[in-house]
Length: 71
Image (cartoon, rainbow, N blue to C red):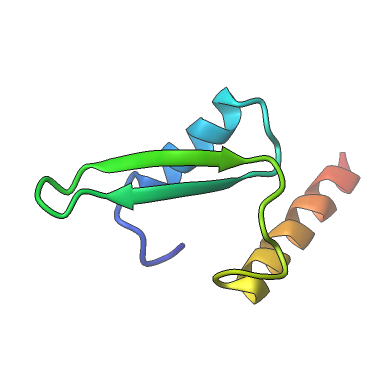
């Protein structure tokens, strides 16, 4: 997440909000000519323990649950 281009994370979060999902996986692709980002899909059940970066996704999910429990 720290290495993403400015605004990419915001696009993914906004897509999840539009889909009314508190937990989501946003698949995105960048046009190699224009640099424009496109959302391919917003998954309601992201691959937390598989796919790319499983440790980071698990930590982010745990932090989300902790924040929700504090409310």
